[in-house]
Image (cartoon, rainbow, N blue to C red; front, side, top):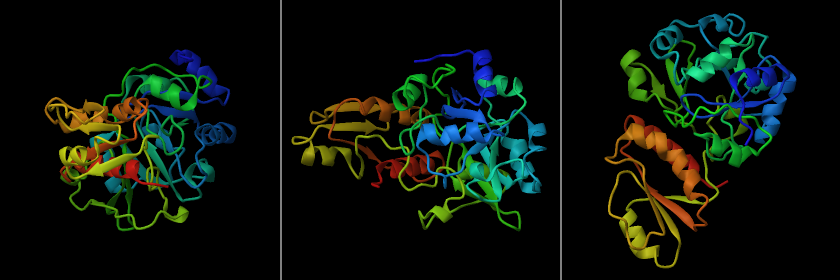
Length: 322
């Protein structure tokens, strides 16, 4: 594992190299957003298709000047509430942002991360960073340096920020022509939290996985997926009674509970079922169980409200087949 300091990372980035950096959500694979060479290296390293756009990261509001042609009033309201933090806004782009970053779309996804290391890094360079999750395309997002190493290998330098605090990606919000906010990707900020600020905010119900319908990261049908198949079951106990004696099953419980005798491996995401703690541990649990040579993993759905709705979206995409 190639661990580097912030100062070393700055030099890599200035030379159009990629660097894995910690954010409050997940680790990102950072590169100079103004360099076609660097941006292309991100797509190559991740094995990411060209139709899947990238998020641009900036240190502060001043960074918007060179990137967007307008900043809608509702975007300002949400930014004032949630920036710096896990909110990404889709905004009309300037020509300074390449079509490769936006997959040919007219809007660019932008956020201001709150992680102190990401902030420090962004303030030491004079260009914005693209920074999609630092993992192979469709695989589990990384929440600690070892996850980046396991997915991308030893050649990618990593700034060690230890475990990410939130554990789920940023929420992506765009705006209709009339200014109404629409959530394109569910993330660490729940729909309800957004609606407390702008009640008219709604969640896009994605009907297609076609390339032209992908307007923001995280909209691919299969995403965040472990190599070990993940199944969503109505009842863990019933499933184990029926299939546990003939399969090596990894069980993911929401809260600590008595281990079932037919479960090969068991992990509880939280001591008492706290959704924030569950969100922080979900991807790390996928990574851990993926190394156990299991036939498949099982998990139950969450109550479909607040952060539970986001978690349902993540496990649904993780369980989908190609």
